Length: 358
Image (cartoon, rainbow, N blue to C red; front, side, top):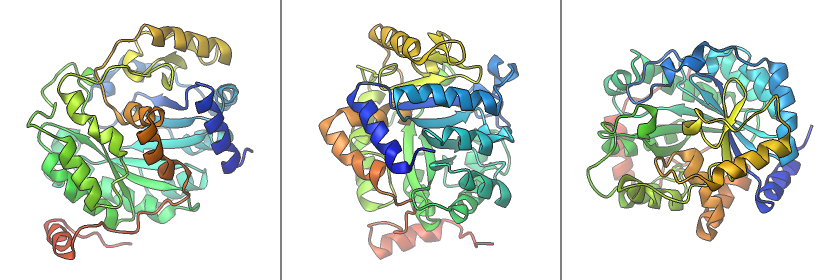
């Protein structure tokens, strides 16, 4: 087992060598939700055979040839795989495993299993301050209530200082005024808050794109008010640029890449229709060379997802400096509710229900 300090050093070496440092690994495309702004739940890959834990162990060891990676286990809904804790454990031998979930399947035992397996961070998707709006967009009644319950259970189940629980919101056409309430609700549960803009490639529709003017100044002001707002300021400053036409010079295939539930590798999840290699059939050097070749032809600027923007911050001097505390400080609990005045914080608190710990 490689220690956390050794993994951080290997991650740094991968960065300096120009190897990818982030990998999105879609463990399943099956999903119990029917989100209106995401069509992954009816992707044909949801019917494909999925790798075993042994496959993940072999794949993680092969990827270790590129150094240590931040590996985001997502989908679909990754907790539809009952063996997710075992997958986390084998990936964690070499890499930093992270999980994004809708929270529906998180129980006290599941939370303990995930944290006990050594997950580095758990992100729960919550987009609205009011349950009926969240449930409608997510296509599942009770989704909002269970998502906050999942945040609480995961926060309580942490066993290592470095383990973080995040609330991840998608900036949509109608929820920017909800973000501060979500940041406050997350803080009260010892969780961090992050945001990323909707990407139209998930549905082919621009109907959910936020379009009411300057976003970046509002997000940066919000980050100054709330200590648990974890998104990198450099990343937030690019939101307006993305919404006005896109952020060019994408580093997909060079700084990050995607692995499908079948093992197919593409420069990013939105290019999964054009895989360049397969994790189980090709060696690490072949994978790296093919990713670099595909990256050289990439002119896409259609997304500004967290997995792109936060990673690209590390290749900008200002963004790198602002990322270092997030990457290297072993503090998983967002203990401070925020930096705002008590009056403002209290006003926000009155607008949101209080969850009692069980």
